[in-house]
Each structure stands twice: as structure tokens, then as C-alpha cells.
Amino acid sequence: LRVAVRATRGLLGRIASTSHPRRLRPPPHVPGTSPIPASAPDPLAHPPLATAAFPQHMGALPAEKRANAVEDDPVAAPRALALLCDEISTLRRLPEGLPRGVDSISDPTPAPYVVREDDGQVSELAANPEGKALGPWHVHVRVRGDEGSGYDASNHLVRLTFAAAYPNVPPDVHVLSKCHHLLVDDDREVAGLFFHPENLPPASVERAADPATGDEVVKSVTYTLEGILDATRRFFSVPCRLPGPPDDDRVNNRRRHLLAEWRKTSDANRERERVIASYERGTGAAGRKFKSLFDPTRVDEWLHPAVLAAAREGSEGRLTPERARELCEEVAPGIFAFPLLNDAYCDALMDEVAHFQASGLPVARPNSMNNYGLILNKIGMERAMDELQARVLSPVAEALFPAQGGGCLYGHHSFIVQYSEGADLGLDMHTDDSDVTFNVCLGKEFSGAGLQFCGVLGGPSHRKRSLVYHHVKGRCVVHLGAHRHGADDLESGERLNLIIWNHSSLYRSSRAYRWRDVPPETEPPDPQCLSYTHDVDYGRYKKYPEGKEGFAKSAWYPPEADQVKMK
Image (cartoon, rainbow, N blue to C red; front, side, top):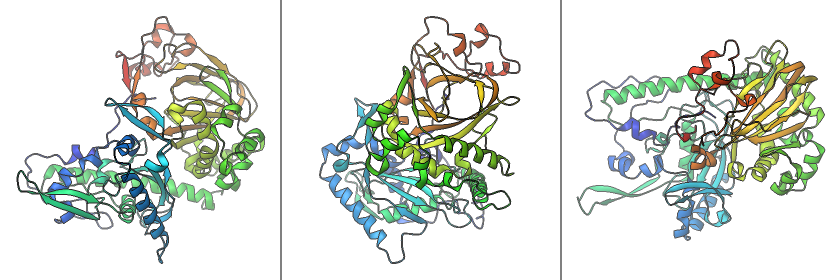
């Protein structure tokens, strides 16, 4: 886990606040792109509307954190849910089909977990047994951008989270599909700029006179699902508008910067989708070798018989947390293992990886530490891995680590790591940019390459040795991303592993994730647990590997403070 300050949702507040504007001609409109400057005066963009009615949306807590507010008004929740269901039903019955750019829309489902506030401090995740009646509710839609936008080759899974205050408050918006987008952060949440009325206009605005000043102010606003979906399509089609005076040079410079960055990220996403499409169709390269590996309806064919039998006992073939816990063996405190994949799938996936690497298409490496392997989401396997996550990984995470994975896993980074003689042999001690990590050995023949575990970041034994796990084909080891671990050097042969980093937007919005206590160490760290990449005191205990001395400048552990703010 990297230490950083995550950008807040209130992007607008930092960009739109200007002092005395200087005169500057607005930048010329570029054909084929959105005119970034604010549009002509519009009743929905009236200044009091932008300044008075919208900060609650642009910088607000996610809907799952506002859930306790509905307890004060239990009448609002059923009304909001009934309206939402009626809107979905109406859109599905349109003669022309779903609105432009929308490929599918789900029924509302209650959020299984929420983060409640306790004396002003955000607490850990809590189950939401009243979610069906009181909300919040998730609606999943698949949306694509307009032709030529860079987001039109495939659709994107978007989660809309509605609270009881709907339709007077818009939903939270998370882009669950992997894509390159300027205004989607690392936690898949869209920036606050999206919620400004220039980009998400309400369907109606009720105004009233301020009793104190007599000025006209906004009393309330109302949204519709159709309007929200249209704004979401535009989010994938053109840059968001940046509000502010049209003749302010600072705002116009930011508009130019926004447009330039939009072009970069949309071009990057266009290239990403080109690679996936080329590999699927065999355009200019060898096509997919095993099409079943990319098919989310064929996940059953991958699973170890024990997992498959347990999953079929649950609703819709989904493993229950109770059965998941029975399958898992705790091999050391906080470290679990269970049989996940069958041998045939392991062999097919290794063959597919080699097939793609020989195709001539660009290979995206897994992360900054692994020089070999590839990202499965970037060759077209994302939806298949989505299904594996939903049916197996999420229930396992909920059973083993409810605070981090309690039914809230929303996305994943799925990749292959590859170790062989003459290439990567091992991996330095580290923690993952993951909330719950699943690591399964695919093969091949090898010796050495044990997986060393130490302690969890924030615990007293973070740099104390815990376990050496020895890989077994098809068997998965599960641990928190914050659990320090590293790969011993390979002695001979070749090893490939499938690693899935799972993320929970709800957990990452909690104080438990954002701030991590780091107690002082009372005794020297174990040598096996030292990291030349991350530990400032590595040189005190061990000699740096050749060529790795430069990491001493960026190392951060142990921190000087007793808490660290996590990215």
C-alpha cells in the first residue's frame, strides 16, 4: 500500500473558486469535442443553484455513509425505492429501447454493508439488515460513450447508489469496469465535477425568496433516472464542463488543461480497447486460443470440484460465506488457503498467456515490481474475472475478512506473474494495493520460490516472520493486501501465478482504511521481513542488493508519525 493523500470528491471547490477575473478571450471550440467553457446563461446554472444547493453532492459522503439518516424519515425510503423501480420499468418499456448509450440496467438491490458515523468519526463497515426497506440501493448499468469518444468500443459497468433522499439528491456514481478516464479516481469514484448542474442538470428546480435578503434562492432540486443516465453517457462521450466565468484566464487555462488531459486518457482507453478487440477478432494478430476462458458463463469449468460443489449449494451458484469459511484452512494467523482452480484451467490459462505474449500485441506488465507476466483485464478477461469474484472470491473475503471484504468488493486487478531463470526470480517484501488478495499457483515445474509472510501493516509484528507458504497448483492463498509478504528466489524451473487484487470502495472510504496506526517496534525486525524498496532502515541491517541502493531515497517505513494516511 502506498502512502498518499487521495483526492477528494470536492474537485469543483478547488477549481471553480476564483478571485478577481482577468479578461481573456475564450479558447476556440475544437470540432468533435465538448466546448469546455461554460454554456450561455441557463436557469439550471443560476449562481445560487451552483453555490447553495450542490456542495452536499459534490463533496458529500457516499450514500452508504448517509444510510443512518433514513432512520429519521422512514417514509422517504419506500417512496424513493418505489419511484426508482417505476422509472426503471418505464425505461425498459420504451418503444425505442433503453436510452441512448445504455445497454442494460439492473433492478435495485440493497447495499449489504454500510459505514455509519459514530460521534463524527467514520467507523468500520457494518451489516445493513434494513437495506431492503431503508436503502441505500445499488443499480448497475452498462453504458458506452458516443462514437469516436474512445469509450464506444465496449460498454462500461457503472454502479449508481441511491439513498432515501432521491430524487432530491443524485446517486453516488462508481465506474466499476476498468478504463482510463480523467475523472475516475483509483477507487473508481467519479470526481465531484460530474455533479455540477453544468454536467448533471436536475430535471426541475424550485426557487423561493430568501426571507432575510429577498434574493431568489434554490429551495430544492429534482433528478430523474433518465437524466442521470444521459449525464453518465456524456461522461463517457465528452469532457465535463468546468464552471466559471467565460473571460477568466485562470479558469480558461484549467479548461484547456482539462481538455488536453481528457484527450490523453481517452486515447489511452481507445488503445486499450483496440488491443482487446484485436485479440478477440484476430485482427493483425493471433486470436484467442481458448475462448472459454473469456466467457463469464463458463466459470464452472474452471473451479476445483470442492468449490464447485459448495457454490452450487448457494443461490444462483454463488458460494455462501458459511460454506466459504468451511473450505478455507488458516495456515497462519490471517493467512488462509483453499483449492480454487482445477488443473485443466491452470494449464489452459498458462497456454493463453504464452499465446498472447507471442501475438505481437502490446503487453501490459502487472505492476511496478514485476517485469514479466501480464494484466488479464487488458486482454479481455475482465468480465470472466468479475464472475469469479462475484460467485467465489467475494463470499470468501466476506467470511474471512468482513471489515475489508464484507460483501462490498467492487473491482479487481487480475494479473499473471511469471518467474523463471534469467528473468524475475523473486520479489522484495511489500504490501499490495489491494484490500483482499487471492494468489493461486498455476504451475509449472519449479523449486524454491516460497512465499514469505510477515505481519499486517499497523500491527506490532509487521516486520516479524510468520510463515513460508509453499505453492501447490490450483491452490489459492488469501490474505489482506496490508499483510507484508515477498517471494523467495526461484531455484530452478518456471512458476506462473494468477493474482487477483480485490478492492472495496466502501472500506476505502472508512477511517479504518484511511488512517493506519503504526506502533513503534520494540525489537529489531526479522531479516527475512526487510524490504529494500520500502524500509528506510534497510541498510542498517542488510547490504542493499546491487543496483537497489536508490530506493533508500523513496523508502518510508517505519514512518516518523504514529499514524499514516493510506492511499
